[in-house]
Length: 377
Image (cartoon, rainbow, N blue to C red; front, side, top):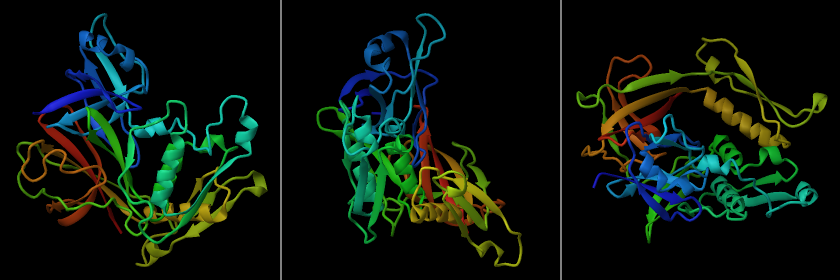
């Protein structure tokens, strides 16, 4: 069956038209807990068939399918681009995160002339684990005219024992977009990964299944652990690409809401990097001006400090779409994969590692790219 590309309605998921991407097109799912960018190049006549939808930012989404299964969902975020008259037209797509960045989380839809009511309102989500809070944020973000999104929830919001509370005040309009609030949840200690997995629905529709981890298991649950062996020769796809980053800290000074001497400040420490007797004291400053609660600021700061203790290794691998062990669509964003790594590399010694899938992308050819991340203490 190979490649198909659909243009779908953003709100309903209904298929508008089949597309035929030209050379220069590319698709992507991810990065995890964030959004990337896609590019779809159409011939002039192909674009004219869908101009009313494709020419309206966020009205429609581009959905690539491999062998009948969606691999990405990418709403059109910018006006069409064209360099010659009657020439090819390029459509730039983003992700659900771009759309959620344009939805505030409020107790109800406060329209024109209701600013004072909005200012005095507050959303309180209580007695939920972090994944359950994510789900409630997404429900509230759809309470707008024509604001429905083709979302369903694929993870149990009450799994796990930890119960949390989050309060989002209406006067803080600069800091209560759905995308910002969900990202904050993913960044605390044991914050869950969140993905929006595109799926087929009856009647030529495409939906997004919201899946997330829990505090006791922040990674998204999966039924099996795929394996990729990178020790074998790979003449058809070339060598993998490896990079590493490290930002070690012993103390992070976190500042929250307030001004001058009234600013909320929370220093958090970790001396583990000095345990070997080597190294020196390192510290940095981080600001989150919309956080007014000591405990929440402290929780966020500890999450950042914990992440700084680890060297982050990122790996990019090119794979054939129909490779027998890991064909395209057998591995999804946020999955854990067992990767066998060869000897001779400085930033990653030989061995078998469980790595998280950060991004999956391609250009409508016979290969696709997976980007992994692994952390070493």
